[in-house]
Image (tube, rainbow, N blue to C red):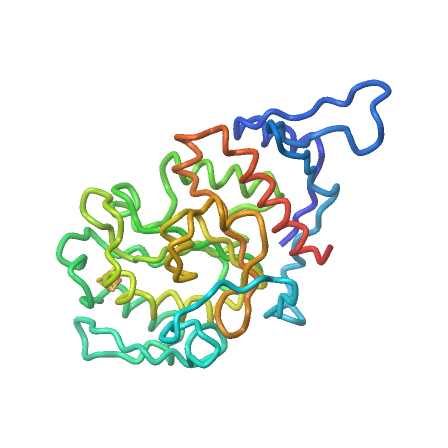
Length: 291
Ligand code: SF4
């Protein structure tokens, strides 16, 4: 994945995202210059120039131990507790009912996993979906985004993050020099909740094995959780996104580095938060390039 970021191109993308950028002022001190998002009360945080995010070659160390990442409290029965044998790099015990006989998800390869999702009847959402939305992108991506659930357009097209929110996600990716073919994008749920309601806990639990298997297969270096539903389900917490975002957390026994940020749909409704999302992505870009 080439991800060299031209400053002019970056500014254009940021402006397309609706983020105002600093203009270099004559006589301004070094570091006070171009391209940092303007956000009252927050320090500017420009993306390092020429960020090289990924070589496209397999990473030598695919799973970071993220030693500085704080861990959230987890319940004893959490599938992400240190003693749980689930998560990336570990067997996923969950079995999922499909139209075919029940399958052991942790052993599935990509094609089998896609087929299992397509025929899944493990929760009631199978009755109202048009089709499942498996996920999209590079199967060995360094960066994996995890959203909430398909909406109406995603349900119709079978792809996550299409429509206006998807277009904004594409611009967010472009702002750090990537496109969606270079990352993997998945959701907590593979089927659309009717009326775009929040996923029920039992639906997220029923679908979790699929997502964990996707993470295990991709082996991303960094996870980005988009929005409240994604973050709260991944981290098994009730904390608000505003308290989770902006710092490195870890996911699963392998302690995958996880950054929580706002969902693009929320950013469309609350554009004043785009600058904070940009700051989160800057941290992601830095992590990917090893800075
Ligand atoms: S949401 Fe997940 S668990 Fe529920 S039917 Fe769809 S694929 Fe199966």
